[in-house]
Amino acid sequence: MNLSEIASRFILPGSVVSHEEITTGLINTTYVVTCRSGSTEKRFILQSINSAVFPEPEKVMENIFHVTLHIGSRDPGTEQLCLIPIHEGRSWLRLPNNTIWRCYPFHEGTETFEKITSPDLAFRAAAAYGRFQSRLSDLDPSTLHETLPNFHHTPTYFAKLLAAVKSDPEERLAEVQADVDFILSKKCLTTALTGAGLPTRITHNDTKISNILFPTNPALPPIVIDLDTVMPGLALFDFGDMVRSAASSAAEDEADLEKVFIDKDMRKALTEGYLSTAAEFLTPEETALLPVSAEVLTFELATRFLTDHLLGDKYFRTKYPAHNLVRARNQLALLKSM
Ligand code: GN1
Ligand code: MG
Image (cartoon, rainbow, N blue to C red; front, side):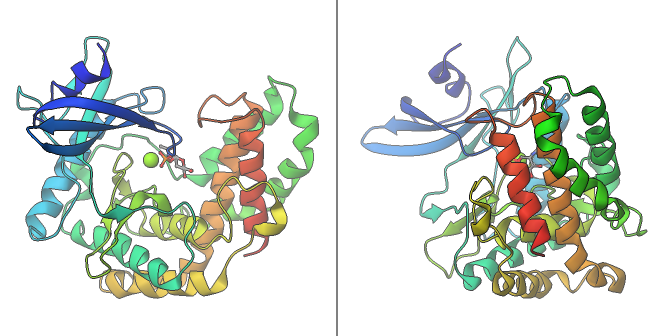
């Protein structure tokens, strides 16, 4: 089935006139599809879920369905992510080969950033992620599937790195021994969040800065996208990952490590923005651990990238052979600057 045929299974206006792949995400396959009805063109996002990463993609869709419905009902006036149903009524499409596709309206008049440059945007992004958690704070976390068990359980990633170091299937260890040693020296970070007895909430779990759509009209609130990993988690997974991503002076795969460090003004703006919407539900214990959460999430992603490099780049999509190593070293440089 080609892309236009897949698109035509969703309730879209008119016929598909073009489509283009977007390759910024590291996991799923994403297209922008343009439909024409009469003289009007409208764009949509059509995306298939990577089933190597998400073994139960329909549970991912059930979570997204549940969460978008809840947010939509709590805040009907604002533009949110919403699923476009297929003609048979469901909010996603399952093909005979078990691939799952979903379709969203393309939010025109918005922009995304791989790297953020103004504290004002940082504040708005952080307030949006805090608002996202806040809107879900009256939904019971146990009503969502844990689609990726232990997704931010840092000790699990640490153990996976140790196993990869031991097996070294691609014989890449010698080249990265210093990186491995640095990670081992930071082992105490592994349990800083998961061992702290913090409350389980509904969290986004992938709060990188490129998962926010900023309306070009600054009066409008940002839109949180990429809800694949929405599930029970700790509030600080989201805060830490957001600081990791948005307060870095450089893109996640900048290879010149001199350019990679934490931007303290940006971190301050993110903290203030997050607290502007999250302070109402955070416990004092959570608030106290905000600073360390950025270190934990940076450490965790460095560990994940390095493990994937050792295992032969099986998880994260790469654009060149040592891409995951570059990413891992980038995150380690960021961590050292925190
Ligand atoms: C992946 O799907 P995407 O590209 O937004 C990853 C995140 C990482 C991120 C790093 C399901 O996110 O955990 O932080 O790459 N998502 C999954 O860019 O593993
Ligand atoms: Mg994602």
